[in-house]
Image (cartoon, rainbow, N blue to C red):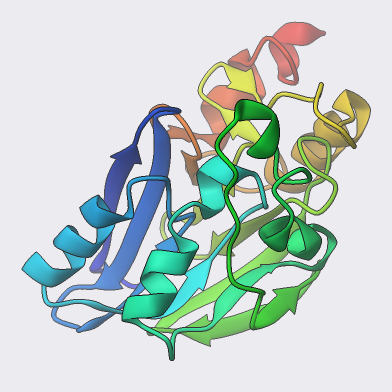
Amino acid sequence: MPAKLQVQTVVSLPFEENTYVVWQQGQGECLVFDPGLEPDLILQFLQENELRPAAILNTHGHADHIGGNEALKQCFPSAPLIIGAGDAALLTDANLNLSAPFGMPVVSPCADRTVREGDTFELGGVRLEVFEIPGHSVGHVVYLCRGHPSIVFGGDVLFRGSVGRTDFPGGSFEALAQGIQTKLFTLPDDTVIYPGHGPATNVGHERHTNPFVGQAKD
């Protein structure tokens, strides 16, 4: 991870979803992870800090994590919209992304690029690796930036003291737990997890204490 990587959390209601704006100090380009349902808050932060997205990245396709895609693409049309291949269909289908059942249909522009397990790329001066961790959604991915410490933009996979819901269509607790234990829990203990909801945590804390997937469960 670059020594001066900045991470700003922008929380969107009504689901208290975390959008992350990530950039290197002194640089004008940034990455925006999971634009939420209050995109004006994100756009305001970008304007105030003179930042422009090099990419818009979704960890998965549920409505609260893609609700701001359209507004950001309208303001920054050259910024590619990136999502895991398995969730790309959720962007344009309000039933699949679970917004229609809540009575607030949300759709997004189509993906400019889809990613899969093992993909690596660099945007805005930030190098990312992709891990597929299904279970909360079929095509959920997380983005790893290696460094000291490494950081993960994890969406709704692993929370502080909890894990993502697995009762949605296509959900699987077994798949989610396996992905967490074999991919996230093999990272160094000080790896920071920036989740889709709630406070940040780290791999060591969750591996040792998480009641759903950690050693505390054994």
